[in-house]
Amino acid sequence: MFETVTHNRVHIDKNFEDDNVLVVLDPTISKINKIHNKNFFDGIEVESITDLTKRERNLNNNENFKQILQIFLKEKSKENVLKAIAHLEQIDGILSVEPNYFFQVEIDPNEPDKELFF
Image (cartoon, rainbow, N blue to C red):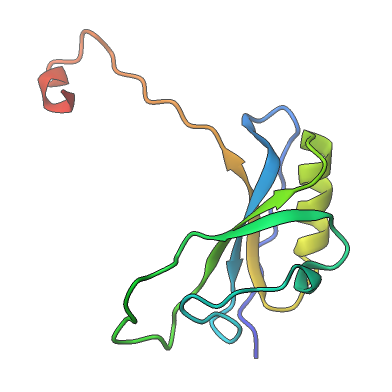
């Protein structure tokens, strides 16, 4: 019924936010602009939920639509993020959970095509 869950092995030394996780939901429980109750994520202290796939209009084909949620946690700590990931991975209907990583773009000043980036 549900798709295969992707298990995430995150190390605490990685560069990620300490107050939220990103969750991809199975198409069977995803709907465009569906509001998910905090109780669905029972077992973690949820501050708020943001639908990162919110749309103004419906898509033509909703069959394989997967909602992506950003879940903000009440307790800020990287340890809490890791605990939330471990817990959320066990909930039916959640395909993947990961921290919200920080990314940094680096440009080599000696790159011959650096003008393309500016």
